[in-house]
Structures are given as structure tokens and as C-alpha cells.
Length: 249
Length: 215
Picture 1 (tube, rainbow over the protein chains, first blue to last red):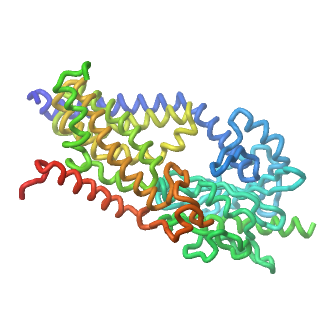
Picture 2: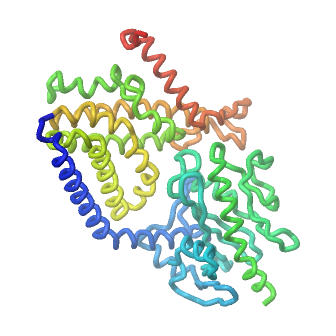
Picture 3: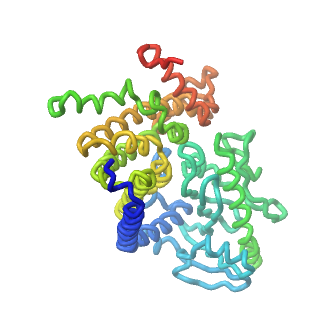
């Protein structure tokens, strides 16, 4: 290495220059691509909601969404109503699916009323209520959508994650895990909210018992599983008053 | 290889066996433990590292005469991080599905010590073409080990390969499971990756005694 590059002045100038170049490059690229990325995220949300209520292209054991180019169309077709529950107030809003659940969650922490989006869909004459959930796994955020009937019996589930361990926690988005939730009850006989626990040492690996409020956990993914349990418990519980109203009306 | 001189060809073939980044240089162990529970993840990681190490080595090599030696490690880190973020952004905008598969690996690629190790040991002192070959060679050497470990961990831990049930169904008790075979759940945990890598090192050194270090 030559002498020239060892001087302090050169080092500082190089560092400043490098930061400017790299920073500008990344900032430019990020803002240039932002519209595309946002659009992809919007379509993905529609696909997720549709997936949970059973509008998907699942084959064999793989989980497949409806394709991106028809997602908007299908969303219009199957989702009849998008509502926002805000305390006692219920409003309809076509953009309810764009609500950022993470932001609403932190709003609730500051003592403000949280806006709860709920998507009412209809497929083959059956009504589905799809609610988003959001929580934390082992490394980063995990989230999902749960489709329920009017008795809060799960009809479909979709989970996703930002950075869980591949092969372990990342498997929460595999069919065998998500499909276990179908048919599980969230409320007990007296109407009390039980949630669904992702349980280790479950005596029911084939998941035939649908009212035990448990599904079989993934080996080696304890903390991710606990995260799923926690987000189901904390987020779906908030919808219980809505479903109770639904029955009395 | 007719295209490459003997010396250049060695850059590719050496890391494959006698100078393997994982088993001999003991680099990149952390990611080898983290993502080898499944064969598919191992393959995705291998391709990502091949890409980043190949290009990163060239970039560092081109910059080698102007990088101040006092801050060279930071500069290397910035180059890797920038490359990975650019790839991630472009994928998010144009191949969203693929980017979802890769997002988990982004952090692991940046912190992979093979990348920093090769920048430091090779690209800083060699020309772009040789650095490129060295990058490709080391990434392939890394890939071989990753795929071997991923193969055994997925096969013995989950009874599947690339998600396909090759040994029968453990819940329905078909195939091998009908005879009382059980998956070894321990294979899914990281320590077993270390043991598998250890076995590979053992096999390799018993076949080639010159690799055994003197103490």
C-alpha cells in the first residue's frame, strides 16, 4: 500500500466521499423504486386476505396465492365489505386493508383508540370475517390474517414473517402449519375467548381435536410459535365484542 | 479449462477441496449453522453468496489502490452492504416473490465472514479478474459444504428433500416410518450442523494427511 493513502487527511476525505456516494446512490434507488415496491406490497395484502378466506391456488402441499394480475379483480369480487372498528363506532371504508396494523398497535399503547380493520368476504354462499394480526417472532416481525365464521371458528389462516430462521421459524408460512388452524375454535362454549396455542408436546399431532385451543408446534421454533400464540391472543381478542354484537343483532 | 491459465484455474479448484473456506479456512461457519436445516435454503444462500462474493471481490479489487488501509474493513463492509441492499431493492420492485424468499438471507450475507475474509485476504492484493475467479471459487467451495450439510439435516431431521417426502409420511406412518423409523428432531437444531461439518472435516483430513495441522 502506498504512503499517500495512509495520511489522516486522505482517510477522512475518502470516508466522507464514500459515504456521500453510497448514500446518494441508495437514496436515489430507494425513492426511484418506491412506487413499484409499494404497489407490490398493496397487491400482496390483497393476496394474503384472499388466501386466508380460501381464495387461492393451492396445489398439493404448496401454498399459492391468486396471481398478481388478477388479485385486484378477485379482491373486488370476493370481499363484500371492509369495515373499521373504532371503539363503538363501525365505519365502512374501501381502503381499510391499507391500514398499518403495526402503527395501530403502537397507537393503542399511547392510549389512543385503535382502528381495527375487518374484511367481510363471501365465497360459495358462506360469509368469512378476515382479521389481520401482528406480533413478534424470534428475530423480527411476524404477521398474518385469520378468516373466521360468525362463531369465531377459524376457516383459514395465513402467516408471514420478516426474518425467522429458514427451515425452523420460517415454516410458519408452510401449508402444514397454517392448515392446522382450520376448524379450530377461538371461543369456548360459554363464549369466553380462549385463543389458539401453538403447543409443544401436543398429544394430537394429526390435529383432529378442534376444540382444544391448540395446534402442534414446529420443532426448533419455540419462540416463533410463542409469537404466533401471543399475536392471536392479543389481536383477535379485540374483535370479540364485534362478533357478540353480530349474534345479538 | 482452456480459457484459464493453470494458475487461474487453481483459484477456482483450490477452495473446492484443499483450501475450502469452511472446512480449512473455517470461515462462514455462522451462516452454515443458521440456514442448513433445509436443502432449499442452503441452495438459495449459496447462489446469493456466489453473486455477492464474485462482484464484491471485483469492486474491492478495483478500489484496492485507493482504499486507506486504516479504514479498509469498514470500506469492505460498506461495499458488501451496498451491493446486497441494491440487489434487495431491485428484487423487491421487479421480482417481489423472489425477494420474499431472499429477505431472510440479506443480513446473513452481509455478515458472512467468507466475504470479508476474501476481500481482506485476496481482493486487496490482486487484480479484478483473478479476484473474480477467487470469489467464484470460494463461493462454490462454500456451496458444496452448505449443500452437503443441508442434505443430511433435512433428510434425517424432517425426512424430506427440497420439501418432498422421500422417506414416507411420519404422521400417516407410511414408507420407512411403517417400520418404526423416526425423524431425528435434533438434526434440525444448529449444533448438529457443527457436528456434520466436523465429520466432513474429519473425512477430508483423513483422506489428505497434508491438511492436518502440526501442534
